[in-house]
Length: 236
Figure: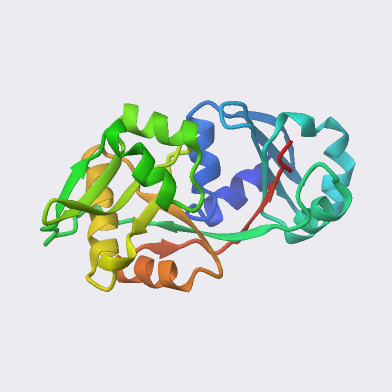
């Protein structure tokens, strides 16, 4: 990997942790020099783009197999703006996303809610209440025992789980149970779960999601200094 790319990754390890985590999980470095790094995640059909500007990207984009990706994640806004304008096969808007990381080793105390691992019998309830639900991802989460529910007097009040890319997410508290601190309890539980496995807890949060940002701050999650720009392929 080119020296400048390594320097960029080391200069802000929280921002680039999703990228390095995917490399550690088998994503492939397609090409790299002093001006760019392209990482292909075949498992998740994603492309990660780290460049020093639009011109270096234009110089290497002929090597990009756009048809292979459902999501392109760029760390450069000019590249994201170019893609949403010029690529008809991707949607004409981008999501701006922060990375939050829990850097501490100490578990979060006073997690006393009734939180349990959910199984497939809760699929319909979770699928109906999660805005970004993906059926395949949910089925995998239930099979891998990485979706958890909080119960209030025996009734499911909310849930959280692990995405396929290793991030925490799927956090949802049902309306009748909000304003009780259950979102905090669920995410703190998942942070502790990951710490117990010697994994670094991290999540992606859209820059406009002020309630989630407030929750990350309350949990002492640390925000990376770079914004990720997500560009999704259009549904076929």
